[in-house]
Length: 199
Ligand SMILES: Cc1cc2nc3c(=O)[nH]c(=O)nc-3n(C[C@H](O)[C@H](O)[C@H](O)COP(=O)(O)O)c2cc1C
Image 1 (cartoon, rainbow, N blue to C red):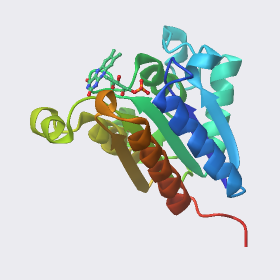
Image 2: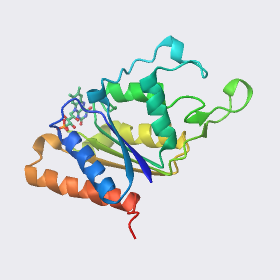
Image 3: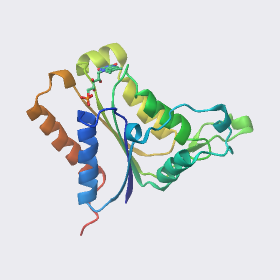
Image 4: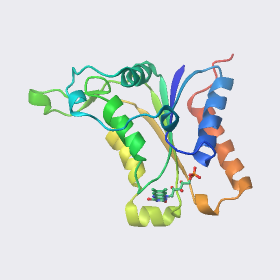
């Protein structure tokens, strides 16, 4: 399978970067074809310009490449920290520019007034996040906004039927041993979601 992996973290030495490396290594070991985009390393510009909003707009090559990779993907993995209960701006902008109308979803009905219909062929999406808020406090105070964003606002709209999200917390209190356990969990989730192509 072709799996698209997206990392949104500015520090290559971060735990998020370690998660992304584990994802890529696990998928590669299972003989999947991996397309990896490190948005900060690529200098992805997250600002959607007015000229790109129209469905049939001409697109710059980097955006067109990201769209081609998204459309071709059988599975999607996203890795990012929770920043203000949301994805970092670079990743929010990636959604704005890459998950376009006519690419990721279709709006039927008069003037697009109908419910969105998903267009992505990816059957599964996994989102790994990290945060510093203890899980119970996160649920009590904020209701887990990242799950709502990714599951309901993004992947359900785009037609990705199988969704799995795993958050690791509390990052600030975690030991190297705890982080290794978490990375092992990442590998287990990836193997379970995208089984090996080897016989
Ligand atoms: C700009 C910014 C906003 C943040 N907002 C939140 C937040 O809303 N909730 C939370 O639990 N942690 C928040 N954090 C903490 C990060 O989630 C935490 O530093 C990160 O998950 C640690 O992973 P890393 O070691 O890979 O950077 C924020 C950190 C930054 C820099």
